[in-house]
Length: 133
Picture 1 (cartoon, rainbow, N blue to C red):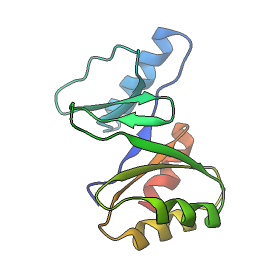
Picture 2 (cartoon, rainbow, N blue to C red):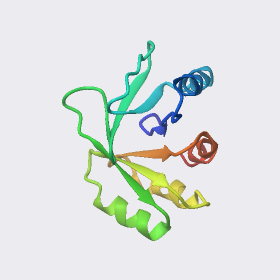
Picture 3 (spheres, rainbow, N blue to C red):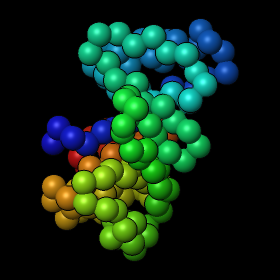
């Protein structure tokens, strides 16, 4: 599934720690980074930088539509969010429940109607998100 995104936003109070997180992610093959709107980020060749502006992600390019980040804690809420996504658009789900099976079901049920991104709050959430996608 090439269109889904698993996004990790490097977060650290100290610039050296933030840079170390980015470098570790690069070594592990991550090529998409989410950074706050005001943060300077020097992307390397082949990388995509997505800007976070509050509860929205902005992809590169002036004509791209923002991708809303929606925090979801249960299957019923996830189903409600997915019903509201317009065809051809995208939504980023910040899944806070323990089980990822509903997220897997969401990937299957959306078909090709829209892009579904999983927004991970920390590196420890990435394996589950990758498994769902």
